[in-house]
Structure formats: structure tokens, C-alpha cells
Image 1 (tube, rainbow, N blue to C red):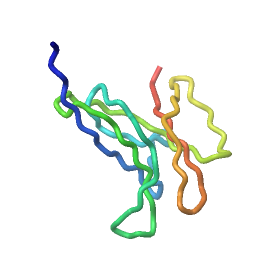
Image 2 (image 1 turned 60 degrees about the vertical axis):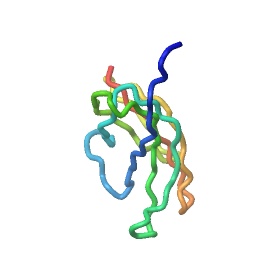
Image 3 (image 1 turned 135 degrees about the vertical axis):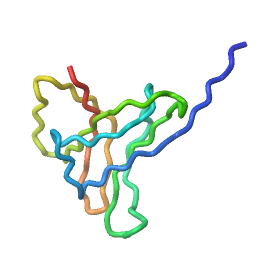
Length: 109
């Protein structure tokens, strides 16, 4: 019988009011091998005015960290990936104001 590996579910929040700068990407340090399991809107409890887009990931908390990049794309927005990147769809969040935002993980080629 093999030992079962421990894991945790961690949350990463994207604040759409903050300009991400670098190629419109948001960057997070996550444990290597993180598996993203959910994308959704969550209220900002400190202001109750703005919402965050949250990404939940199943992680090995003991794994070394790596930095991952994500792009937020609004429905109807034209996106042209750069020649050195690939985008992989993770999920969609329906914002309180009616805007629909799609999250893609950015991979460098």
C-alpha cells in the first residue's frame, strides 16, 4: 500500500482594479505542480464594493515555489497571444456588475 500525499487548497485573488503591467499578466508564486480547480468571483469583504476573481488550486504546501502568470480577458475583448506565449483557459467568473471575465494561464514557449 502506498502512502497518500497530503495536499491543501489555496486561494489566489486577482484584483481587476490593479493594472498588472507586464503583458497584462497577473503573477503568483505557487507550489510547483499546483492544480487549479476553480475560478469564481468573491466579494472583497474589506470594502463590499469591489469583487475579486479568485483562483483555487490544490497544492502540495511542501513543494518549492514557482511563479505563474495569468491573463484576465473580458468577453468580447480581442486577444492576440504574443509569439512567445500560449494561453490555456482555466475558468470564467461572472462579476456582480454583469461583466464576464475569463482567466487564462500564460505559458512561455
